[in-house]
Each structure stands twice: as structure tokens, then as C-alpha cells.
Image 1 (cartoon, rainbow, N blue to C red):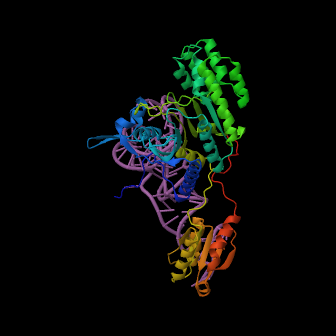
Image 2 (image 1 turned 180 degrees about the vertical axis):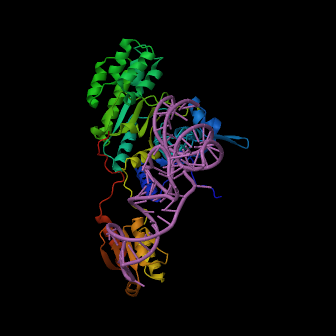
Image 3 (image 1 turned 90 degrees about the vertical axis):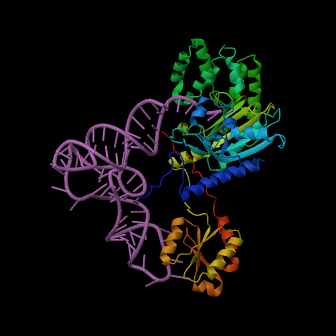
Length: 454
RNA sequence: GCGGAUGUAGCUCAGUUGGUUAGAGCGCUGGUUUGUGGUACCAGAUGUCGUGAGUUCGAGUCUCAUCUUCCGCCCCA
């Protein structure tokens, strides 16, 4: 009896064509992060349980993968932010602030798998950590990076929604709702999902007065352009330091976003955005893909005053955002919006006609040394099968190597899309491939999200 | 943790009130084509019907149990 090959539920595994696209996405993210001067970080998957759970509440403990090995009580990381705070606290004397790090890595949560929810998943995190203070400009810089990434991936119809936690604190205090603010925010967070009526019912259950409910509902439902929302907020005339600070911060961030290259069509102030329950203390973001409200936020984050408070007395404010890559990929794939095609990373497949491989090897070496990803076909089979292989893996060019080519130091290069075949001297083949490559338009990774969703 | 579904070929799925030999499309293999793939035509292979028990002359089909996967809820630090 053979063991049935299988993987754990909630652990994504991809076929070659998909994995290539997934890795392209990771490449774009990594390259974008580095273009803004972020440094890579790679913390361990396993950490001491008491370190990772220094702050955690009940739900975290339920979902975390935790086990004993010898006398050690170990946990698998459930996000990248807690390890970051540990890292920053541990190495604070060796780090130069503001510390800009990115980390693209897997995290683990033992929750019930569902659509777009995995037990092992990639997150792409960026954070900027300050020492005692951190400029508000970074609150605009971080979402600008995420905007750039999504655009580079080929996504156009999305919007980064933002809010400010100080605004919410400042709003609820004069209403006498400070104690209930956490519960209210949790309900408001579901607004787009459950609708205004259900929200109202929930607020009634919290025993808010009718006046309070009306105030809350009309506040969170305020929408419009950035300027409109800002003037609405100013017009409320709430004389509360927190509230006024928030307005000024939102205004600063909105203005800075423009100069950082994010068009107004792609961000907006949305007073329904709350993000989590504690932890965040200033700007908060959630990014939604238009036409896919059921996807939820694909990329979110915000500002926190005190990143490493569980590990050190030093106060380290930070701003960060996280893109859930596994989830994002899975949702895109489910809608058929990913551009799969190739099953190889090679640009050229060298196909020997006969069993004499020496010239074929030479051709492959020339191509590789010229910076062209090249695969050498080694199996002895009928020529038709070799071409069939080339077709299946989706390689753009095939270099056919036979008696004629060998005798004359030529390469017969076939363009697998057009079917055209050209005989080229070996010395020119690298230049020729570069030429062809530059003539082809770059394919977007994500196909335009244009269909209307139901 | 609570609730609802699902399981038949590699994949997506049909399969009648229980009836004798288990079906399609796609994919796969081979051929038409021995230095040229995609399209077309022809041929072929592939199943413990999730698993175990029960009812029955007879179970893919009905009953029970169990496992798997999926979808809501909770939660999302």
C-alpha cells in the first residue's frame, strides 16, 4: 500500500506556470521596496513562545502553532510585525533610525481555511521605525509604494482608503462613547459587508441612544473627495486636540500622496476604515479592488506609536503596510485575472536534432554567457516530440541545432509565437535575441480588472 | 469553537423510481507527418464510484458511522 501524496489543508502549493507568476509578483514587490531604500530582513520562522506571545490576546493563542521541543516552548510566527518589534528592540543599538525594513515571508496561523484564507501565507511587509519620533511624511510614502506595486502588477482599478485613529478617538469622546469605542469600531469595520441597517441594529444592541446612533452613522457615512471630507470634518467644529490633530495629519498625508505620484482617483478618506482594535494610533489604510468588494482589503496597515513596548522602554513609533500575497494571488487566480502561459523561466530552448550534443552545449553556453536564460533539451526522441515539448512549456524561442548548423556555425532560431525561423551566425545570436525581446511589449502580470462583478 | 455542504478518470463534471459491461468534455499517449509545435482527423490508456459497515436477489444510487475538502459565522494581534 502506497502512501497517498497529499498536502495539509490551508497550505498552498502551485504548479510551474502558477509558481512562475507568483514569483514574478514577489519580484515586483521586492524591487519596488528596494527602490524606496528599504533593507531586507529575514527573521526566523520559529521563535520562543513567551517572546511572540508577549502581547497576544486570547484569539492569537488559539490560532498559533505552538509546540515543545525538549525544554523549549516554541511558536511559529503568525505575522511579521511582532518579530520586527522583537528584532528592533533586540538590535536597537546596532540599527540606524529611521529604520526602513521590508520582509517578504511566510507566516502561519492555525485557523480554519476558507476562501482566500490560508494557514501558511506570504506577507509582504514594509515598515519605517523611528526613534522617539517619526515624520508624518512617511504616512504618505508607505501607501505610495503600495500604489506603485499594484500599478506595476497591472492593476488599475483599486483604491487606498485611509482614516486616522485620532479622529475616531476625538469623535467618540465628546459623545461620551469612549468606553464603548472599541465595540463601536468593530461594528463600523463591518459596515461595507453587512450594510447600514445591520450596523444600526448592532449599535442599538450596544444601548446607544438614538441621537448617538444618528451622529455615528452620519459621521461614518460621510464621503466625497478628499477636500470635501476634510471641510466636512472642519465644519463639525469639534474642539478636541485629538480630533484637530487628526484633521491636520490627514490633510498632510493627502497632499503628500499627490506629490508622491498617487492620483486622487486612487486614494480617499473613508471614515469607516478602522483596522483592528488596538495597536494603531494614527493613520490607517485599507486597499480595495474595485468591482470586488467581497475580496476585502488586500493591503493594509497604519501608524503605531510604540512598536516595541513589550520588549523595551524605548519608544519607537512606526508606520507600516502589509500586502497579503498568497491571498491576493489566490483571489486573482480564482477570477482568471492572472496571465499564466509559460512553464519555464527559459527564453530559449536549445533543441539538438541528433545525438551529437557538443555544438548544442556550445550554443547554450554562448546564450547563457550573454545573459539569456537558456534550457538545453537532452532527451533523445523524435523531433516532433521535441517541438511539442517546446510548445508545452511555452518557451518563446527554440534554437534548432542539427548537421547544417553545426557545419556552418549557425543557429536556426524559431520564434514560437509567429512561427518564423531565422538562420543566424552563432556570434550574432545573443544580439538577435535581445533585439527580439525589446520588440515585444511587456506582458502585465494581472490582466485588467474590467469586468463588472455581480 | 459553532453551523451548512461536498467526495465518481489527472482536471471539470453527468449518471433516471436501486438493475446486470462505469460515461462525457478537457488533458494524456500514439498515428496521419522520419528537420518543425499550435489547428484538424483517427486510434488508445486511465476508476477499490473517499473509507468502513448495514439494508437488498442486486448499491455509484438507500441508511449509519468515519475521514477529506469546501463555504458561512467567530476572529483577523
